Length: 334
Image 1 (cartoon, rainbow, N blue to C red):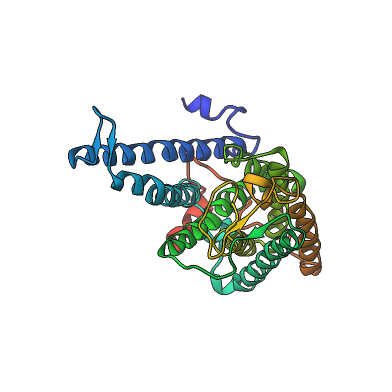
Image 2: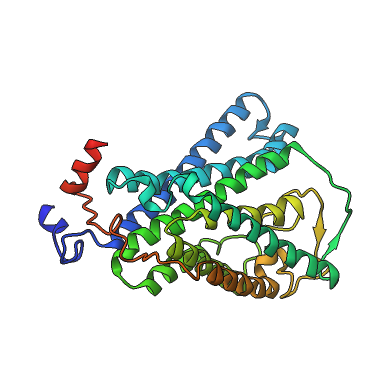
């Protein structure tokens, strides 16, 4: 086993476990946990409902409680669970297996990253609203009623979308890019996580080639934010407000998920402008807005001197099977 772990297939010339194996291991644990844990929870819930008489497996009877759980509670609860797993798995790997501090994965204190977070939130709001307004004005989207309707479910979906922003950015930007930065090619570091970001949406309802390409483009934009700042707060802020206004405020599908909105927006016909069943992320308007957003980000970071590849706080050796002695000693002193 020791000989295998020291082979060139596993480790590079510097004795570091290759980035691909680190990423593969973390992604495998994530998908395994995301399959097993919800399955166990649903089976326990199902068994409990059988005991209470809400489910009769012989007659096929389902009570109103079961319908409520299936239609209202489980979609939100399982989404929250998935995002928590997406946050916890890479952070555990980074902190306890790779023995790195959390701030070194692109999550410094909010005090040092709040400005990027606020700018990201404003940018996400402006971009989403711009697409919404253009769709409504051109008749590609119609609002059922401009009178806002509020529900306690909006709070739970807001919590869900907050976790989505953290989970997807921690996994796809912070963790993947921080591991891949050892490759030394900034284009590779930006592109691979963006492609992964697009591909994880392949199973979403209404997915199209254009929707996946748009998400990859958004991923590249987010990668640029991280590369220029060294933190993912702007990515999280943009991700949060884009999804929140798209779903909770304007009542449009979010990556194929139907979220109850304060107002409800319908698409008279599914086309390449509104994105159809997948939502505006599958439309050409989002492509255009992303290009404009990217130009703004380039302007915003025009004076940035940060060197993502050469950041020595995260480019030291990742020894998964033996501690990095220098870094280990530093951690012991903290």
